[in-house]
Image (cartoon, rainbow over all chains, first blue to last red; front, side, top):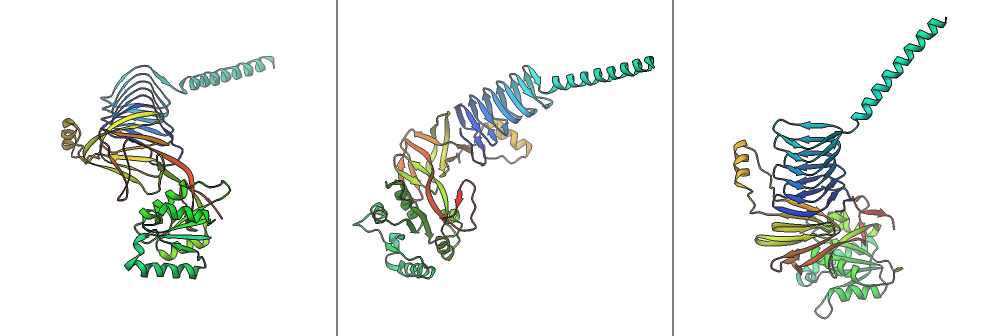
Length: 139
Length: 258
């Protein structure tokens, strides 16, 4: 799907069965069934009646329905109480509400590099102290 | 320079309105040739005649149905690439007119002033293949919920619908007036006391749709039947140089002076 123009986005109604790839630069809302990939540059909302069998990629994913596939959210992934995710997820910011179901591998983007930065800062701080003690010893 | 194609219903009692419009055109200093379709000459023929004569500005005077027909003829008629033809409208019911809104005009005076100032926008139009173009949305209406198959280069969808509307920018809107959803969903929303949105509303957009139904379904532009399913509807980008009002800025249109 080509979505170069600014517009209301894409809505898959509850009585729709769609096969293939759904792409939009704007929001995508799924109330029906999608067999295939869903890609948005903005938000993907899977409503309570929505089912996606395939990967989902967006800036923000809000899941009240079911996704069987990998979910990649650049900014945030939120699984609502009725939401079910069967597949891996990659995101910066993860919210799983009580009652939600998640079966898969979770990767928090940015978590590893944040840890490394903290360790590097600690190392630098430790090196700084050693140098001070050496200077004091020399003097 | 200006070629005015009046709608056929200007004959008879519409002559007073026709004269009023001609007077306003003369006052604005944009007189030209005025023609009316007749049984002897169809709209497409007289549009073609105007372009052959070298008129660079074709103006449809009348309803949206009439303006859509003229616009379709303008897009269809083959001509050398260097011969630029510009399309404009004088909608006789500007408040209700979709093309009037597109042009940014609310009444006859504003429409004629827009023609005088001649600000152009490159307008994308819809096309029902092979050769019927449209600016106003087209519709398919079913008596009862009917399955519709929608195919594009990226996906295929099957849905139940009572009405499908397709805009000139190829936004397809489908709704099913009979959809009530699953029993569980109905009970759930009733229990929560929440207003339920019409979950059967579907909005898709692409550059090309192939529509298929179990029985051939009529595609209407206003009240005019223009095609039947199965049909391919596509977007013809920037197919028309369209005269708009000076203040009109519309998303998706490329505005330039002329």
